[in-house]
Length: 466
Image 1 (spheres, rainbow, N blue to C red):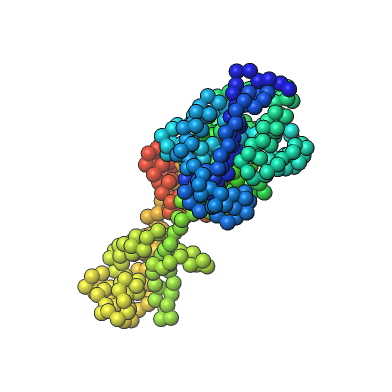
Image 2: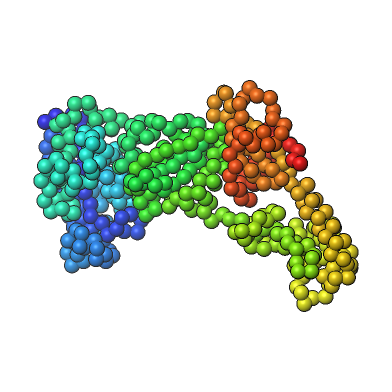
């Protein structure tokens, strides 16, 4: 068996009341100090969690409320645990789980855990590639390692020790020492994520996808530097449920490079709305709730109305807030002498105030011919469309052979793509669209583009739309 010099390992297993540290507690702990060759010291104890143990946890571990009723609380054994872990490398199967619990519990007792970590899941993937599963039970079956007293801290820590010793004995390429180097991502990556996944990430703007075991996208993120941002996800090990579940579910990463950070922001919006990933929340809630609609009533009068978005009708314009749409409609009514009643700005029971407030000769009472009134509505709609800007944002591409292009057409985000860097500017919008991919838009995406052009006006090129 290979002997690793100058390292002391604390091989750890814990049982808990649940899957994350912030709202759960430890029910049993086993820590074995090991020098890479043999066991040096052992600490094992049941722990009173200070809360009921869920029935399914009792069924899994065999630890019930009666067994821990007179066991010490974690606070009583915290000093002993801190001393055992202080100068040792923290080793566990899926190390971030055990480490997050003990760090959280020790911190609550006034101790700070700052150990180097080794994950026997990650070590096993490198030492025994190609196995069907790397759970502790499955590994022991496939490697013919006896495991006794499964799902108890002492039994699982003994199995982890045997697995660790097997890895050390066959370690011909210094796997353990390489993983212990401070810059090695093995120190912080989720247990199921291969380090090669990080190596493939570019240091470019773009979006990245985290996939679960079945390949489904569970999170989409944006970045100015994809590699740096992805690494940042794993640089802390928060004890809350969302973080712990998130890390356990990440099995693969893919990415899509973009020319600029703005394009990454826009693509993130598009992909979240398309894929609806489990762990994205904020942009899921964003939705254009209202639209300005145009229709003709039974008397032949053209009507404008602010309504909640309708699936099968295309609005003239969209708004997040009802009041935002109402304010725009009031401006059109005042400017073009439209009837407030026909625009639903006053109720059908109220007396028409059009003649006094807007100059409308009471079209709602059919005192004005529909033909005459409709001309003013057409002018109002044309004015609205004329006020909505059309422009491109031309910026750097993903490489020197291209430039990025974002198109706003009549105030709406049309899409984006890449133009050949050597080509002359394209003046015809239909030619320009041949290079672009159209995407669904919303007010948030539009706002991102407008805000960007205020900051970088030189990148905005106005275009005419017939």
